[in-house]
Length: 235
Ligand SMILES: O=C[C@H](O)[C@H](O)[C@H](O)COP(=O)(O)O
Image (cartoon, rainbow, N blue to C red; front, top):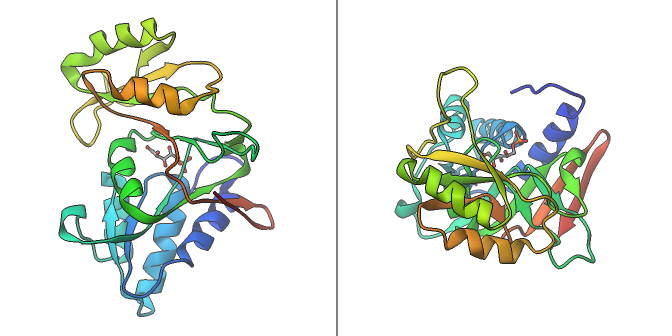
């Protein structure tokens, strides 16, 4: 998969390095997005060379790619353990002095509900990112998957919390984005999020919210792809 801009080589390095963590016999959660796609392709190559793994896809996109590159697939409810999750992020807190170090915003591809489920279940969750994703604090809009009937009432509650929600529109279809789970997505601006843990708890309490894109205390490491290598942050 190719993406626009100069970060493609960095994404590839991060993805390929994370794929090197996969061991024979592992169950691996396969995240969604352009960076994780490089990891899935690399795992597929290793499978071609004899590595035995089972993958759990997190979206239609990652499922299709995994099938294309020959990774045998399974489901979360069919396995006892998920050894490793490899997944991208839209933003990562990279300030080691911050209590939110390693917190993420995810869901740019509207896959965050399934991603959070498997990333949280994994023994080890590795984020793959290029340097444009790193920030001192989270300030990207937060994707919030909502039941279709709930989008306007949840939007009202988000405004009361100080947010500025927008229903995500599909680019090549009239109407909103519909997730793989049949739901809608509100992208909510909160400005700089100094306490993502507190905001995450408030969002989770709203009836009609299926899942939000704040991932707090879930990642074990971030692999940051650079033009000439990979930097690893362990949390
Ligand atoms: O819903 C999508 C996911 O959370 C992605 O992992 C995230 O948007 C990052 O994607 P990319 O690697 O394409 O920037």
